[in-house]
Image 1 (spheres, helix red, strand yellow):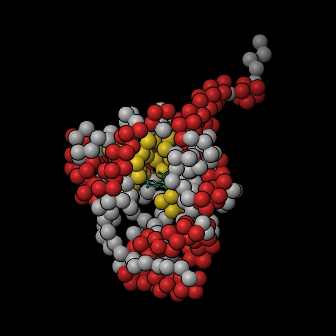
Image 2 (cartoon, rainbow, N blue to C red):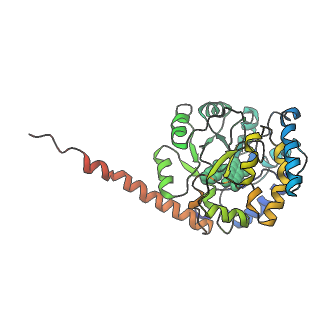
Image 3 (cartoon, rainbow, N blue to C red):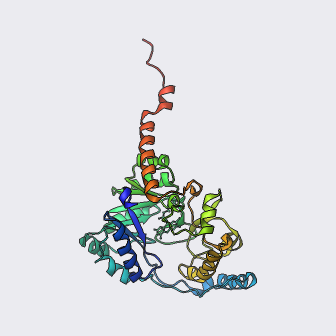
Length: 332
Ligand SMILES: Cc1cc2nc3c(=O)[nH]c(=O)nc-3n(C[C@H](O)[C@H](O)[C@H](O)COP(=O)(O)O)c2cc1C
């Protein structure tokens, strides 16, 4: 992907720092172009167990009924200190943070080590905070995006801005370069966000059928079909967009805000469903445009998106519809 002109990111979430390091070395062997690493910022600390106890009971009862395993809810910081230590010495050009904005001291330290620091934001206030903290670039994630909402904190009344209004709103809060993310699967959509002022797009779902993607068989089948996506906390205790399935229908309404506790509670049942190729209980993360994903090598997808975006921008520049309908010169 990086060799085709994109910027490949290594997802460091749910991995120990040592595993991130070995994956990074493997990625380095296949490209000499710049690489990014994405890290989940840890939350403030464990959630109050009383707030999610009823959901744990509910899932235990349900799991027993359907014969699925559930795990123990627990909190961790996803090996944060070790990952930061790794980033300060690893051969990587960009680090992006999701679920929060590190302190200005930490951002300054990473930048002093030569890293570019990107922060994912989902609203103008988060954009303001990330700018003040010293970020280089903001990833602007609209509600169309597949996977977790990157919000600094999760709360019941979280605003879910669509990408285009969000780009405009974030622009009022910062002058930093913006990378647009959410529901972009074609060169036309890429052209749209570039015209709206983004310098680049971050694309997930459109790459998930590529042979290089680690997407499981059941997830691939679901992505190809025209399934409706929804935002849910049922799988992880944090809001995320995925293809609607039986697990979401059964548990979404009862799901608490408790991340990563609920992630660990459901991890084993999701793993079992993935291994069995059973889409009913898998977290089928996908953005709103997932059915446009194509089974093509990642490098081809990058090249096609770029070429189509150029063509779309040129076509839009001519504004044919406006030209046809604009009034002629005033009568002499
Ligand atoms: C399967 C899947 C996994 C994702 N994992 C991460 C992740 O680890 N870190 C992150 O910042 N964003 C993650 N995202 C969100 C993407 O960074 C991006 O915001 C999203 O894919 C954009 O929307 P799209 O899927 O419609 O292109 C993930 C998205 C998907 C679909």
